[in-house]
Image (cartoon, rainbow, N blue to C red):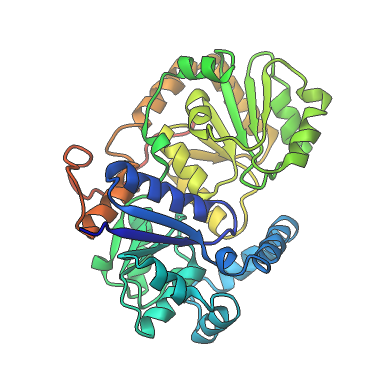
Length: 395
């Protein structure tokens, strides 16, 4: 019997979209190894010469003109990509998309970025007969995600579902699954054991993540972070920005036994579980990984648009706070030093299984494929994770 095949299309605008695709693929394979999954950044795959230039231009725009990015997000918020745009995308950038699909012969296509979702939607209008799911990778739903040809939307929360149904999408075509995270984030380990494994001291620990591009905050915040290094351990994880790593390692303020500076790490799951507080940009994937580990978050430099929406969602639930001054750092460092046991208890409550179940998205896809093995016990029913009920209140 032919194995079922799932083809996941993404794009490299940031790291979250492709990260979600790989997380879902790994989750599906963990639960049912018989299902074959393939992840492709479609534009890069079809046009490896032009794609890096476009992604580089996008990165520079986000870094240097975030207000412009936010303005474009807001002015187009309620609009799907029009037919002319879809046609132009197809002819200029995705000409051979149909050939890829016909060669791989998937039983299901899942898109984790609006552009490949628009391209596959157009192909479906032209006769492609493969179910199309769209996995929205943030805690908001921009209009560019919406296409009439999508068979099902997989979304983070009931709030996002309401946004889509408010735009006329039938309720039964939207399933709340939560954003998928890699199976490494499904597991639990001892904080003390992980700190020993990672070479960290057993003391209050703050993990600072710069995002996939290693973006950082200003001097005021950095000075506040380094002021208490004798009592608070700092772990910086700067992603792929090697220049930033070199600059930080040469900074006299950071030459301290309680400071660890990392570039890209495949152990983010362990770092999050070993830490007591996460300082990060509010990307959809990072926020969800932190949710899976129950760690409180401080957000800095949210990109106007989807990151602002992510930030609003987690702050409203009491899962995070905006890092807008050194006062916020001082408050949390004081809590870590003086009220450590209480913060640990809050973290335990945040890991309650009725809050967020990181397997849900993979289980949903398998159930809808009709290819589930014995998943009894992995989830009692298609639950609604990430509900709007507050999980804990930031102090």
